[in-house]
Length: 73
Image 1 (tube, rainbow, N blue to C red):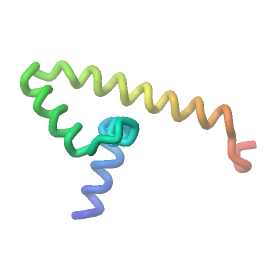
Image 2 (image 1 turned 60 degrees about the horizontal axis):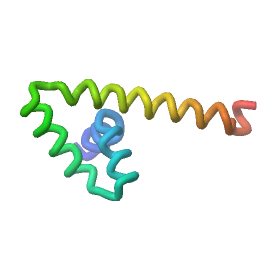
Image 3 (image 1 turned 90 degrees about the vertical axis):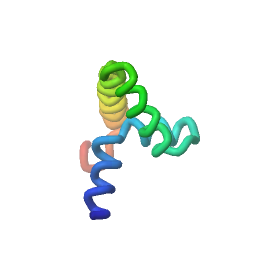
């Protein structure tokens, strides 16, 4: 069960965890408020979540491109 929990936290909720690290705020609280906001606004924060997930993925690819490892040379 812990394996599944870590997968969900790292893969599905990566945006909330990253925001928590940057803002020095618990990721569980960010997830909770995101769920509340989603229900209150009938799902519109999901669009923001997807944009942030895309931006984080794009940023990660830029970092890899600017500083490749020895295996990528």
